[in-house]
Amino acid sequence: MGYRTILSEITICCLLSAASAGAKMNDDAAPASAAAGTIMVDSVPTEKLPGWLQVGGQVRGRFESPSGTSLLNSSRDSYYLSRIRVDLGVKPFPWLRLFAEAQDARVGAYNTAPVPSTIYNPMDLRQGYVELAHEGRVSERFRAGRQELEFGGGRLISPSDWGMSRSFDAIDVSVSGGPAKVDLFAGSPVLIDATRFDRHKPGEHLYGVYTSWANLLPSMTVEPYVLFKTNVQIKSETGVPGDALVVSPGARLTGKAPGRLDYIVEVVVQRGSYSSDRISSHAASAVAGWTVSNAAWKPRLSAEYTYASGDAASKDGARNTFDPFYPGNHSYYGMIDQFCWKNLKNYRAGFDFVTFKKLKVRGDFNEFYLATVQDGLYSSSGSSIVLNRKATSSHLGWELNSVALYQWSKIWKFGGGLGHLWAGDFLKQSKYGLGYTYPYFMLVGSF
Image 1 (cartoon, rainbow, N blue to C red):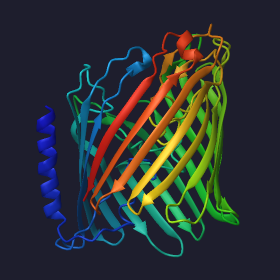
Image 2 (image 1 turned 180 degrees about the vertical axis):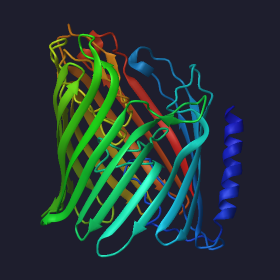
Image 3 (image 1 turned 60 degrees about the vertical axis):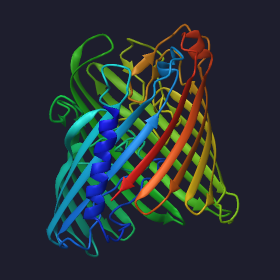
């Protein structure tokens, strides 16, 4: 299976390269993600095609060889992850655009069955939408269909592009003018199903208003928002069936200060109901960075603290565990993606620099604690994986990460990384004390 996957990627590469021969890269149409090792690409117009037609795509391969999976044993599993995307955009009028994106994701030499949907989903429709737009002093955009949604830093709503990548069946209305922008959206997350056509999750919906105001204060952007999440046919802590409504007002601040300082602060509270339970939770994050000098290698130090509340008492009619909605975890809470923004305290220190023009290097140290031992440890998917209310320590452990990214050409990018988690007392007391090691090498071709 592995060699067939690689051969199929080579074939797609050749076809896409031929289609984009002589193309000019359009940075506005194909923005790169800020997340380490992640590239998100829209169509790239070519000179050989009519102006109303856009063809593009992406080939991504990743070799992984983790050991200590699930923190229970030291066994190693080495495999190859393949993800191929083909994009087609049609713009018959300046105000109308039709877009479709097919995606094929497979894995070779994976030892564990069944293969999880996070890495395996044969050819399917990842995006397919209609967009109406007007550009002017006040610009409007209306987009309906299967699409990506990403707001702010992606802690709550993100495609989460490191893995299979998330999309939504949604409507998004965006209005912008001058320094201000507002998005109103409603939709449902798409469930990945390797056995049939992907469909949105029944009974689960997302609604929101996300605003942004640049330079409200000097060099500061303010992003107030309110998000709503609904579910049907769920149960309370005591087993009472009902529906759920989570209301999440929050705000995000980003900016720069004198002395080459930068910062990001985000605060969220949650209220609502979960069947007969009342919801009361909160979360916050703060990042400060300092670019040490104006040297060409751009050395930068950063520090971060992240908190998300947990539930200290079960079956009391109150749910205090923060719900991170649909996040992109890979840029936060450790590169090896073992935890999420849920019943968590995370301290991080980092250093990144550019060794030369096309090579970026980053290193991080993370220390993790549970917000409360009475609640569980949650995986990157948001599922409870360890519950030990008798533990005497909330310390989950330490993690060291290093990542390098090399932009070899306009099309090809290579990257690699190594991360290791040393188990803390909570995991050891819960018999999950072996730690976890995660090395990878990745190549991405964006056409």
